[in-house]
Image (cartoon, rainbow, N blue to C red; front, side, top):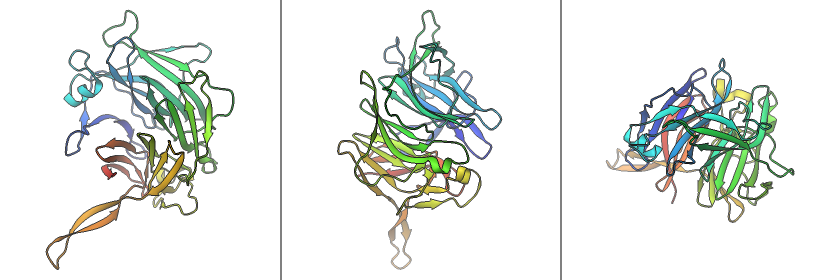
Length: 362
């Protein structure tokens, strides 16, 4: 995990590691050689392969907001492991050694298309060892619905750590495509990219542009074509800043804030500041699941937390169920053993969080 926002004015560029194979789960701060990316939030952190260096994986940081006075970015930074002592970036992180930040040589595949504009709130996934970028927004306001592919390779005559990053704009069918958006999620199931939710504008009217539409793009097609999906079941409420994770042929969504619909369960922001920015004051509750194979939204689940409370009458501990504090945006969600981990984010009370919550799935 890299960077993010820690308060109304604090932007971070620290690096943390969570080993899912060890108990208890502890966030460890990591150190890395080289110059780190400037502090930022709303960027992406994506693991990709290195062409020309078989078995080597690196992590790419792209874009984001660098603070009120620093503006938005389209810079690229790469976190590498020691190619002699560790075979992968995860090995280097686990061993707490050999990590290094570098800036690659950035190249445009097409001079006409260039490279992606500065942005934040975009999405990035790893597909066949390459990075797939979609959407985002920059000041103006201006929001995007473009799709890019990034290939990281070893340049001819480059040094041990020198890498070449080539941007190529994906040519999609000229038909329909998702409206512009930021703060959405993009999830990869096989070769198909699924985009859900987000916000179409950063302007004063952004509350009217929060969406809960669902789109897919088959990246392996000769001519990729966007398709809007209309599946059965009740979709999650319109939202921005939510999280998503793929579990087999299903995608799980949690959190985010935006516009409540009928019978929605959530919490309204109780404080000002970032919790009420752009009028997105409804923090969605529950975990939504999209079943790709059956083409339907599953009923939203609201997990409870079991807490042992001592009973003064008999001296034994009683199990009390409490609602999991799930109402947050800008958080991280990852799969773990028999469940999910929800980490950090902005709470509905305006506080930034650094907790790690486990949600069991049986």
